Image (tube, rainbow over all chains, first blue to last red; front, top):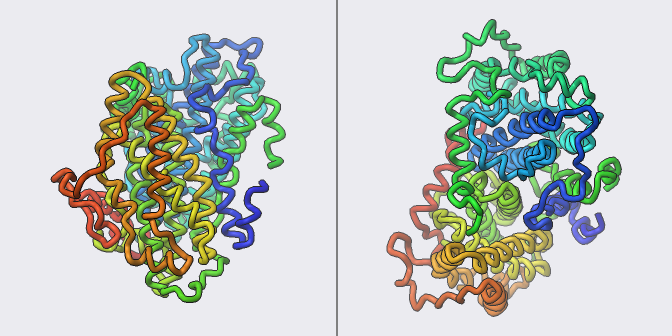
Length: 307
Length: 307
C-alpha cells in the first residue's frame, strides 16, 4: 500500500486501521458517474436482455432493501464495534445494489441508471424476497436474518463467479469476498448469543424462528432464474439449498441452537405479512412501502435532483 | 493489492470497486478487541493524564455525535452515490471516535474502554461542540455543517500529526486522509448547490446561515486545550481560524454564496438551543439527549452485554 509506512511503527492495530477506507474513495473520486463506466455491458449471446435485467433487479433489490434495514441498526448496536461492522455490511450491500441496478439498466436497453431504479420504481416493480423487507426486530432477529441471508447469498455469488455475463461475474467475485465476512460476522454473533446466557439464547432462538418461514422463498426458482441458469448466466437457487442447510446447521449446532422446523405451508406465515414466495414477481408486504417512502422521498420530491 | 488481478480485466471501474472494503476488515478480524491493542499508550512526560483524556473526549465526541447525525441521512440522500459517500464519512468518524475514546481510557487510568465512554456517560459528560448535535435539517444544512466541521477538523488533525503523544499523532495521521475527502465531498456539493438552481442556491445559503452561529465555538480555546498545546500534545484552536476562513471563503466564492456575517454575540443563537461555546464543558442542548437515548439504549438495557 505504501502510504502506511509512517503508521506501521505504532504496531499492527495501526497498520490495520490505516488501511481502512484508503481504497474506497470511488464514491468521491467518481464524481456522480456511472459505476459501470468503461465496462463492456453487452448482453451475452442467447440471453434475453429483459430477463437479465429482471435477474439483476432480483439480486440488486435484495441487497438494497437489506442494506436499508441494516442501516436502521447503526447507532443502536450493543457495541461501537458492531456499529462499525453493521455499517460496513450495509455499505457492501449498497455497493452491490448499485452495480446490479446499473447492470440492469444496460441490459434491458432502457438506459435507466441505478438511481432511476432505486428511486422511481413503485413497490410492485421491486423483486426482492420477503426476508429482507421484514421489519427490524431485536438484535437476535437482525443477526439471524443476516446469517440466513449471507449464507444464501454467498452460495449464490460463489456460483455466479463463472457466469457467462462478465459483468455479473465481476460483481459476484467482488461480492464473495464481502459476503464471506458478513456470514462470518453473523455466525460469530449467533455463537455468542446462542452459547451465552439464557436470555441471549432465547433471543437468538426467537430471531431464528421469526425469519425461518421466509427461508423457502430464497430457494424457489423463478422462471427467469431457470432460463438464465440454462444459458450459463444465472443460478437455479434450488441447487443451493443443501449447502445452505449444512452451513446453517454447523453454526446452530456450535451455538447450541435447534434447527427450526420447516414451515409446512405458507399458511404458517404470520398473518401480518403476505405469503412468502412472491417477492420476485413484485408482491410485497406493507413493510416495503415504508422503506420506499424513506428511500425515495428526497429524490422524488426533487425529481431532477436540481437542488 | 494482488487480489484484483482477475477483476482488472473489466476495466478501471472494476479495479476501483474491487479495492473497496478489502482492507477495512479490522471490525471483523479483531473480534471484540481493544482497538489500541499492541499500542504503547503511556502518557507523555509533563502531561496530566486527566487533561489528555478530556481532550480525547472533546475530539472523540465531536466525531461520535456527527457520525450519528450523518447516519440519519443514509438512505435519505438524493442519489445512491451519496448514500454510499455519507455512510463512508459517518464510518470514518465513528472509527476516529473509537480510537479517541479508547485513548481517553488509557490516559486517565480509569481503564474504561470506548464502549464505557460511548454508552455509559450522561450528556453532561460529553464534550462535543454544539455544531455536531444540531438536529438534521435539509440536505443543504447537512452539507453546510459537513463543510464547516471538516474544514475545522482537517486543520486541527493536520497540526496534531506532530503531537508529542504518538497515539494522537497516529490517529491524526489516519484522520487527515479521511477528512480531506470529507471536506472535498462537502465542497463539491456546496458548489453544485450554490451554483445550481435558485432553489438549490437558497438551500445551500440557508444551511450555511443555520450552522454559522455555531462556528465561533470551534475556535474558542478551552483551558485544557491551551495546557496541552503548551505541552506540545494538543492544538490551540484559535490558531486555526484564519486558514478556516480562507478555505471556506474559497468554496463559497466558487459556489456564488455569501460569507455569512459573524454572529455579534451568542444572543443571536436561535432560542431553541443553548448558547454555543459550552459544549467542551458538558453543557448541551436537548438534541444531545435525543441522540444518547438512541445510541445508549440497547447497551444500557443490557448493561453487561450479556445477551
